[in-house]
Length: 391
Image (cartoon, rainbow, N blue to C red; front, side, top):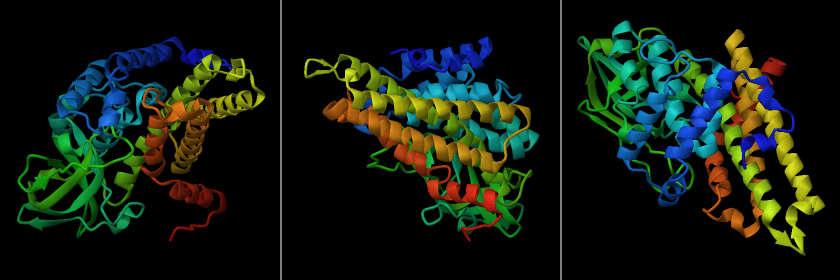
């Protein structure tokens, strides 16, 4: 079912022609290169690294990687353009949106915002083209919501840096060519550009995931990793660096989650119109219509919120609590839409022949990563009350 069929509020009229063209281009590339295969990738719990690199190349040719950054081969497009791209990517699969988000909003953004000109020239053009894959190492096995307690360390040894530690749940890590790694130093938390071919770096794959199964996820393990002095990102110290990158990624999630929600809603609406019980389509029953109406209400509201935040980001930028409002609202709404859509499909809702259960499982991870539901709730609470409740 075309997405526009759902547009009772004429949300499409809020976009200009160029923005619609961005949306259609990303929808088309996902239709050609992702949707025919993603159910199989998810069921297998594995995507061949060569396939991911081919996808990255396609996305690079379309200008999706670091698309909101300026220069160095990046497209320099608007926040709304990037949001629309994230919607279409996640309508295909959250793991595919994660590939693009980690590459552009985390790894590339960190270098673009805080790196030297030499670092930018060395890495960003290849990453924008999809020829070089990046990852972002912040989360540790024992430190997720509290990155300030990280134990990964970087120490000086002559003019070099030596890194030791481990990062986990790192999207793209097993196939990445470069990692942006955050580590504790004598001068505070610093970011480092770490080529993964450096001796002492390993990136084992995390197996047995029940969510984001079409995404490549792993660890970044650092054992006496020696880097030159110019490996450090000089433009920032402290948690402001990684947290600002996370805000960029969270912004994409605000939009992307509505893509997963739209896919589930569209599937439920189409199914309800063709599935007959008691002599008529189940869409003719009041309780089914109530489910569809509530799902549409949540999707339309979340889509309007995403667009508002996108316009605001393009005009003045976003405050962290504004991004938290968006992620908290839209991911929880998308999860509820998927769960309700599953009930409309009945037993077929758990079948891989339909995307609903896949989106639902993926969104359980999206709810947690880039800040848990609890942490975003407390960020919003602090903004409202002026009282910090998580320390």
